[in-house]
Each structure stands twice: as structure tokens, then as C-alpha cells.
Amino acid sequence: MKNHPSRNEVRLVLCFLLMWIQGASFAQVNPSDIPRLENPVSVQYLKKKLPKTGPKLVLDAKTARVLRSKLKSDPVVKNVYEAIRLNAREILDDPLLERIIPGRRLLGVSRKMLYRMNMLGMVYFIDQDPGILDRINEEVIAVCDFIDWNPSHFLDVGEMSLAVAIAIDWTDGDLPASTIELAKAALIEKGIKPSFENEDNAWWVDANNNWNQVCHAGLVAAAIVTADKDMKLAADVIGRALDHMPMALAEYMPDGVYPEGPMYWGYGTSFTLVAASILESAFGTDFGIESFPGFKASAMFKLLSSSPYTGKSFNFSDSGEGGGQSNGDFNLAWFAMKTGNSAYFEREKFLNPPESMQMSRLSGLGLAWLSKYKEKEEQEMPKTWMGKGPNPVAFISGGQNDPNQFYFACKGGRGSVNHGNMDAGTFIFELKGIRWVVDPGNQPYADLEKVGFDLWSSCQECERWSLLTKNNFGHSTLSVNNKRHQVDGYVPIIEFNNEPVPEVVLDMTPAFSNDLKDVKRTFIKDSPSSLVIEDFISRNDQTDQVVWQLITQAEIEIIKGGAILKQDGEQLRIEQLSHPNLTISVISLDPPPLALDKKIDQLKRIELRIPAYTFESAEELIRVRLSGDE
View 1 (spheres, rainbow, N blue to C red):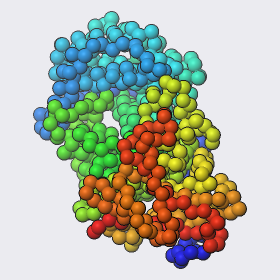
View 2 (view 1 turned 180 degrees about the vertical axis):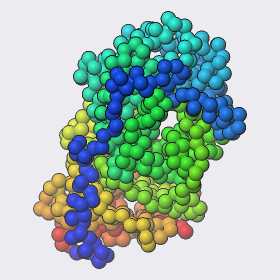
View 3 (view 1 turned 45 degrees about the vertical axis):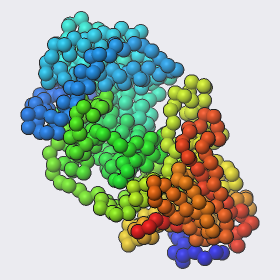
View 4 (view 1 turned 180 degrees about the horizontal axis):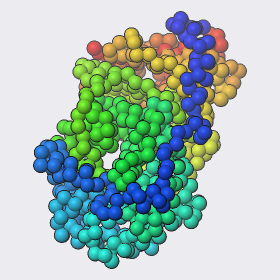
């Protein structure tokens, strides 16, 4: 056995037990353990509780009073509204939407409609401009005349339903009666009814992913504005949502980690916030959404998922790297509104020049959340944080004033989670405002789908895993015997310490089936400007070769006992502490292995290949240190 810290000898015994106690229980939530939302909804409940007049979708009378007051006194609200007004004016020069479906999705059209109604609807609500009302009228007629809203891909219906419902609600009876009748009929016939008529299209009803969140939010909005036409149908829609939304909300349990990654946190969570806000404005309660276990904690997950130094995300699953966002985060603003925590309120970004701010398709709703924010506390951001769940993650940073700008994130999980990758054990690492260790992130779905690529099946041999962005060969983790990770092998975080030396331990064993006996991966912040990665491996008769991988875009100079990474005038040293006599290999991934793979400039995989026959015993420690200049 090679030299390794004595703590690993103890850890070998403890980790197996900890995996079951702390990790395996969170691999998948048992449906019987999922909390339920309150659900008193019936025809009688709607008759009693649903307001008869005035906007019901977020802009209820109380919120409207607060918003109008803040538009006179609050610089953030005034600035964001001016940006919305400028965005609305630009829409007036655009052609009306058409039912154009590239591939199988109308989603782009639905999203444009939702954006337009958020911009135009909010401006009309505030300014009562008849020219804006005329354009809303034209937009509503155009989409309601579509033959359908593409129910075979029900996200399209969900977002379109929300858009048309907002148009009707925020104009509060000022549209022509014929348009209101047309819109309500379309919401029922093209929005609500298809969700009950075809089970193949409505699989999302009790799904545990963002489809659940988006589609229920859109149809609840549709139900509220059409309740006067069919109270029983409206009650069925709202009651169904309250019964089945917990399936998606359970993904935030227990600590707030959203398994689809920070980008999809933005998507799925935004529509849950819409649903909660709509229910609260219409009925005075969100029926327990806000207090659902892990949901409010997810705001901390989202905040920590972005580097405080580069703004780039820990882009695991199908997430993008982001960075350089010019607008404040409206989703975080909702959490700021609910908690009073100023850490969630990105004030300076909301005060950017209005002409530079491109509003999102939910920014009209977001303005209402901004207007209701009252600071109660400023919570200091933790330097270390860990969350369990289907895709557990951990973060370590140097804090706001760290001269080294140390930022690290890692994850466990399994490939078969929604939007997941075979990336258990992977990590990203920054120093001095430079991302040295990168994740390849997501790639456009449409380009893959239009050639018939099976992106969404997740069996062990499914086509998804042939892509570099999806399999373990495109991530900074371990690969064994040149095989893919086990798609259902759940890797938990089994130990997390923040004092005195920050440390994260993952049990990687389930990722490798029978190819290894046992693997524990440990990340240690051993100094203000360095990170140590330890992989404690127990081989078996099936173990042929272990490959230690690091993905980077930096220039690489191989030296004895390691390598030097160079980027933006800075350097990062890679030291092979356990295997100084082995030579690092560099595999260019630009161009990538497959024509369908995402092309990333200067992408490379650093490899340390360790044949099993070189193990001095059944156990081996791979120990690598990444360090910069302090």
C-alpha cells in the first residue's frame, strides 16, 4: 500500500455505514414519504373564495397598490419598470406570432408570447395606453386562432396558457368582448381539455421534473381566468395541480439542491413561484408550496451555484455555464420578498441602465415580487455548504473578500436523474477569477433531435451516453476499465467538514459496478490557494485500469511529477503527490470525438492512467494537488 493519511484507514470502515445512513436514503424519495399540499378545492370552494372582479393573477388589489406606490418611491422598481416599458415598445415593431414548429416544439413561439404578454400586459396595467391594448388584442387573436398549441409537447401548451391567461387577466375586461370570449374558449379547448383527453400527452401530471412545474402553473392560471365559464373544470384543474405538484417539489428535498442543475432550477422554480403567487393572489394561500421541505433552502443552493468571482455557474446536468448576467435574478427576488434576506436581492443588477436590460418572459410577474420586498436581515453567505438529495452537491469558497478568489464545487448523484449526466465525482475549480477545471455543460437539444438522436432515454447503453457532455469521459472524475459509469449507481456525499480544514467525501463505489471493490473520493482545501483530491481505491479481480481525469481549457505544460496550467497570465500547478513517476497524458477534445458532440474551444482532458498491476496491494491512493500562487 502506498503512503496515505491515517484518517483513510478509519474512513474505510465508517464510510460504508455512512453511505446507508446519510446517502442511500436520499437516492430516491419514496412517494409515500412525500408531503402533501393542502387541497380544499371544489366548486363550492371556488364560488366562495375566487374574487369576482379585478385581476386575480398576482396583480390583486393589494399588490397593485404596493406596486403603484413603489413606482413613485423605489429606484429599483422604477428602473426595472422602465426596462419593461422599453422592451414593450420594441415588441410593437415585431410581426405577430405564427404557428411555426421546427422539429417537434412550438415552445419558442409560446415563450415569445409569454414574454410579450409580460411586457405589454404590465405596461398596459400601469399606463393604460390604448395602443398597447390594441397590440395585446392582436397578439391574443393571433395565437388563439392557431389550430392547437401543440399538445404533443405539452410544455408548449403550459407556457402558452399562462401567456393568454395573463393577457386576459391584466387587461381586466378592457379587451373587446369577442377577444375575451375567443381567449377563454382557447384556454379551455387548446389548453385545459387536452391535458385530460390524452394520457400520452399528460404524463407530466405526476412527473418529478420541470414539466410538472411549468404545465401545472400554466393550467392553474387558465383555470382561474376561465372559472366563470366552467367552474367544475376549473376546480378539477386546480385540485389536480395541488395533488400532483408535490412530485416535483420533492426533488428539492431535503436541503434545496435542484437535481436538474442551476439552469433548470431557474426554469422549474420560476413556474412554481408563478403557481404559488397566482394561488396566493386568487385564494389568499399557496396551499403550502412556500413551506414545502427544501423549497426555500433552494435559493441558497442557487446563489452558491454561481461563482462570486466570475459569475459562472457550476453547470452540472444540462445546465449552461452562464456568467455576465446583466439583470438581477427575479426568482431570487421572490425568495427575498418572502424572507427579507438581502443576499437574495440583487439590487445593483436591477439598477443597471434600463436600455441594457433584456427582460425575461416572466419579468412582469417579477416586478410585482420586487415591489413587495422589504429587507429584514442580511444573511452572511456561507463559505462552505452541502446539500443531499438525488444529485448532492458541495461548495467551498474563500468568501467575499478572498484575495485568492477560491471557488470549488463538486457533486455526486447518478446519471439517470432528470437531465443528468454520468458525472458523479466531478468538480469545477477557480482561482484568481479563472475557471481552471471546467464542466462541458449542456448542448442544444434541437440540433440533436432533428437528426433523430435519442437524447432522452437513459438506459445503460442508451445513445445519450455517447455524447461527451453526458458521459464520464467529458468530466473531471474517475473512469475505470474504459467503461461508462453505471447510470443508476447513486454516489452520495458521505462526509462534509467545514472546520478547521474544509473537506468533502463521496462514496464513488456505486458508479463502477463490479469493476472496483470500493472507491472514496475526498476533496480538501488544504490552503487558501490549493485543493487536494484523494481517491482511495480498493481493487478487485475485475479492475484493469483506473484513469484520473481533469477537464480544462487552459494551456498545459507537462513537467516531471505533474503539469502547469496557464491561462489569462496566471498559472496553476498540478502535483502528482502519490504517483510522481507517472507521466500525465493530455487528450485534445477540440474537435470532440463525435460529430454531434458540442465543440468547446481548447477543451482538453488531462489523464493520469494507473494500471491495476502497478498497485502495490489491493488498495491504492491517488493524491493530486492543484495550487496557485498565494
